[in-house]
Amino acid sequence: MAAQEVQPSETIAKLKSESEALKTKLEEERAKLHDVELHQVAEKVEPLGQFVMKTRRTLKGHGNKVLCMDWCKDKRRIVSSSQDGKVIVWDAFTTNKEHAVTMPCTWVMACAYAPSGCAVACGGLDNKCSVYPLSLDKNENLAAKKKSVAMHTNYLSACSFTNSDMQILTSSGDGTCALWDVESGQLLQSFHGHAADVLCLDLAPSETGNTFVSGGCDKKANVWDMRSGQCIQSFETHESDINSVRYYPSGDAFASGSDDATCRLYDLRADREVAIYSKESIIFGASSVDFSISGRLLFGGYNDYTINVWDVLKGTRVSILFGHENRVSTLRVSPDGTAFCSGSWDHTLRVWA
Image (cartoon, rainbow, N blue to C red; front, top):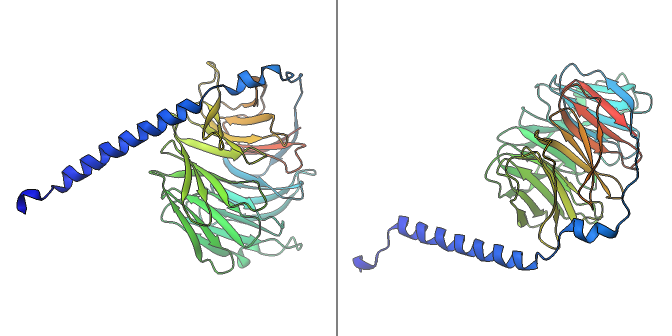
C-alpha cells in the first residue's frame, strides 16, 4: 500500500502540467475562430471627418490630484474625488460646487453617483465604501448622514451602483470585487479570481445587468456573473496593469486601457481580443477609457497629459486633445453623449464638447 502513496508535490506538478496543456488546447481552439481583423471588416466604412472638441468648462476647487469622477443621470451634475480627501458635487453648466464632503482619509480613489441622483458613494485608502445622501439644503452637514456600506481588507479602487440605489459593486486592492446591500451593509456576493489588486470595474449596460467586467494588476480582464459569483470569461493579452475597463454601448464588447500604453477591444461573443489601439509615439500608459454613445469613438486618457480619440472600427487615432497640465486620471462621457469630462493630477476637471 505504501508503494502506491503519491507525494503531494508530485500531484501538484502533474495537475499543473495538465492545466497548462488544457490552456494551450483552449488557445488553439480560440485561434481557429480567429479568421479576420476588425479593421479589415471596417475597410468599407466611411472614415470619420475632422471634428473639433474643445474644453468648454474647467472645474477648479480640488487641492490635489483628481482621482475619479462620475456623471449624474441628469446629464448635468458631476461628482469628483481627490487625493486631498475631498468629494465635490459640481454643476457642470455653471461650474458651481453644490456639495462638498471631506473624507476621513486622503486618496479618495473611487466615487459614483446613484442612479436616482440622490446620493453619492466614495472610498479609497480607508478600505471602505461610504454612501452620502444628497439633500437640496446646501448647508446641511452631509457627513452626519454618512453610511458605511462596504468593507474590504485593502484600498477601494472603484465603486458603482447597480441599476438601483439599493446595491453597490466595489473592487479593491485585496484582489476581490463584491456586491453589497446599501441599506444593511450586508455582503451579497463576492468575486474571487484576480491574482492581484483589482483596479477597475464596469457594469454591463443591459437593463437586466447581471454581468460586469473587472481589470487588475494581474493583467487580466474578467467578466463575472453577478448572481453566481462565477468568472464567466477571462482575457489576458495586456502586458501590464489594466487601469480601466468600459463596456461597448451594446454590451457585446468592452474596451480596456493599460499601463502597456495600449487600449484594446474584446468581443464577448467571439471570446477574444479584436482590436488594439496604439501608436509607436504613445509610450505612456492609458489610465481611463470610455466610448462615445454611438460606440464609434473611444476616448482614452493618458499619463502624458493627453486624451487620444480613436476610431473604434478602423483602429486609427482621429484626434488628440491637449489641455491638462498633468496626467489624466479619469474620463467619462456624459449620459446623453453630448460631452465628456476628464479629471487630472493637475487638480482640475475639464468638460469637453
